[in-house]
Image (cartoon, rainbow, N blue to C red):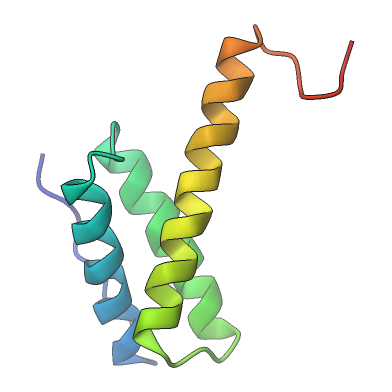
Length: 88
């Protein structure tokens, strides 16, 4: 599957940030489900653009960190048999 292109007419930095984040995550092997990653990154980056962020590197780095945290939390949830951390 090829990744979905992200475009935001409000801020070209959003599109650039998406490409930076996507390329980094693909190169590092962090993406297992391309569709999930596309949706996650597009939603996070659109949210940052709506907040007024304009620095493509800052947006990309934050999206990468958020995605990595999301994957870690999802994997931990699966490993724990569906129990949230700190739960009984």
